[in-house]
Length: 76
Image (tube, rainbow, N blue to C red):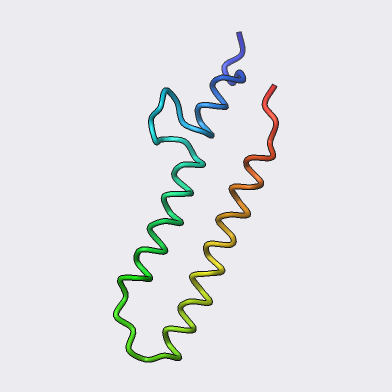
């Protein structure tokens, strides 16, 4: 029996037995936290707020791209 069999890899990537512990879940949690932290920022300067929004959108886009890449891996 291989150490890194299909079930082992699947549980690492997607979590196991209903727990929110997989890589995908952690990346999605990071996206949610980034959005929440941005919403909680008290930015009075409109230009700073717009600059931060661009950075936040880029971070979220890169994380979503990473999730898509990870989801494209086939385990056999």
